[in-house]
Length: 149
Image 1 (tube, helix red, strand yellow):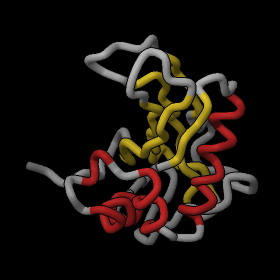
Image 2 (cartoon, helix red, strand yellow):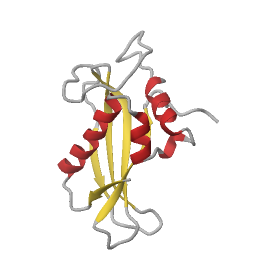
Image 3 (cartoon, rainbow, N blue to C red):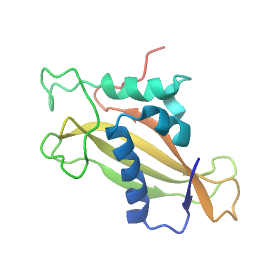
């Protein structure tokens, strides 16, 4: 479990999440799953993270490409002209202890994609000073990568 200070700025949260993009770029899916979990993985663990990245398809940004891996976010160019990077903050609610979400589009094969990774920061109670960082979902808007019913 990765703990993050709740007093962290948006830029600091992005820096933490980007360090995990580096782990994804190294294809160390087991490390990501072991430390962050994967809520939408439907019991698939590290394999679900890998599957959701590798099953991505985009005729718009990657015509004819069917092999995908996360690449370095520092050097990605082209592809999606407006990759999403969004930090949202929430007030603590006992029924839903999510206090922040970090949503960003992933760099794949050197280009920005519209495959979105959603991270969450959760707390146990209203007086916590740290939250737990988790990987919630990886999915694309035009091609949801989760398996069907």
